[in-house]
Image (cartoon, rainbow, N blue to C red; front, side, top):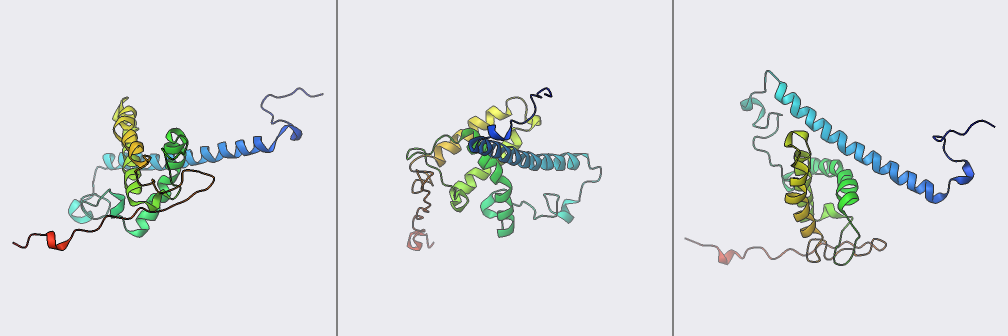
Length: 199
């Protein structure tokens, strides 16, 4: 009988459906984390290339952001055009699923709600996006050893307290992950034109 290698997978009869499901979930989480980290690495590499470029682009030609975009283009996701919005949501979704929720999500309850349709809630989308941008900056080694702690204190904790409070943007949505429900809260009425000064 050949010696057993501890790295060998268990025999076919020892693999259960639960074990296989766990392996698949672990693989999916690792792939999503890899994708998120690859995005951050690409952006950091771009930052490094910009710093090293001996001939930076002329802001009068390319715009103030140096990449051909509009000068002073907003970082706020609510100002993105439809294509850029869809791409940004697709890019940050692995971070939301496997870092924001995976590490900090906790259980969904009526007192701690979450909505799987979070990109449809403008307030939630904007807050999550801003927290994601801060995470990219403050978990970079250039932000120092306290960067991640600053991110948790100044960005993550206020985000979770606001988003997941019963009166937050998900207050009318699911409290049971087995029976998801999504409902946008109505916006308050717009400003009454009669209230504006005519002088």
